[in-house]
Length: 162
Image (cartoon, rainbow, N blue to C red; front, side, top):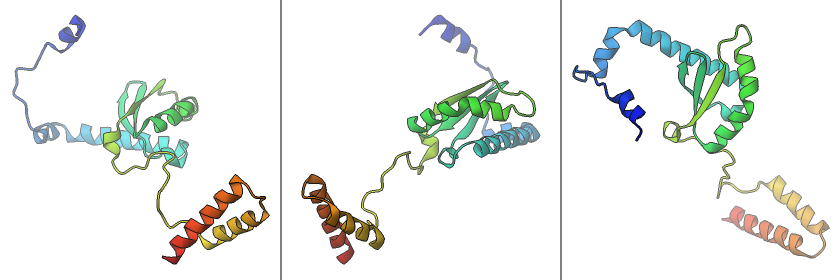
């Protein structure tokens, strides 16, 4: 590691580590106002984003920079495409932020379905869908597509019978 790393972290406090309850007792009002600021900013951001990105979280605010935590690389990619319009919306009344950074932190998002997730097994195709596939199958000439539609119908009709 570089010397800059060791210089930066070489000074340690001589005080013993204290439990978090001691830290919370010191200044609960500052903690509460910081939490409210994060929640308000997160709500403003979510109003600007499409629904599939509503699970991103404000991880850090540092002067004019916001760090957003997202559950996956797919979410990060979509969010990066929206950064210019998001910054513009957040700076509407008065300019506050100049930068949005994105961190992938999947640990924070257990239970969040990834983008493009295909559910396997489920209920299958409903009766209207099966009727549409039957109609399509009757209008197709013999070939690979007609065979695929026939196999699809057979498989899903068997599931309905079970």
